[in-house]
Image (cartoon, rainbow, N blue to C red; front, side, top):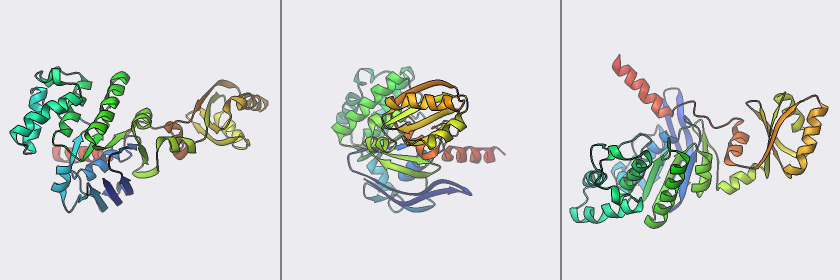
Length: 327
């Protein structure tokens, strides 16, 4: 459904997306996981023909994004990171307007609108103005709108951003249901580890515009080791160096004063590690043990947590353009 070769986007000296090779299979839910500023939105924008690549090739649903942009647009639906509904229209009217933009005939519109409203459980709210919807309802309506014209490919850019955990989980259920009932391939960007783990068939971890790992969530986590021990100690750097020499420790990383240890048989190892720390004059304040997560994979690959410090490169570029316009 998606094929890219060397897909790249530059803004002057800034490389927002660097030579991405990617294949997304028909019918899967594929995740782009990474911090804000990693290049996720820029990648989607190129695949959706909203942004021209600097170099490289990309095809979506068999259509070339540069050679046949209209063919790509007819084949895709997209839910943007920022809200894009008309708050003064009802839910039904928003879908009606979108369907007309895609030149859907009246008979097809009348049949399709109830179908997509039913998929996201909003049929009973179809005549309510969108300004009276909750945040979760708005996201569900945007997803329904993206499905109106029966796209082969649906792009979801941070679809649960800003939603509370319970609403987020409900939205995951709707996304899964759409994937199964509509047979639509979905590419989702997210910086939520659990979202990528629970929802996606495969995940590409992206950082600084490059894909640094790609596999199923289970296989990615298995590469990080069986257990992760997290310890807060009086001297994290010293303890990290000490643990790197331990035969049972596969990986030791110091992150913000906490030492992450990738190990096997973590429960048996904890008493030994505490004893080793005390022997070298290091106080242990807390110890916790958990199975490897995608967060652990990211830490192992980059040496840091996923943070929300920076906006996407495309957003930063837009801000610079607007600033120039004001001058």
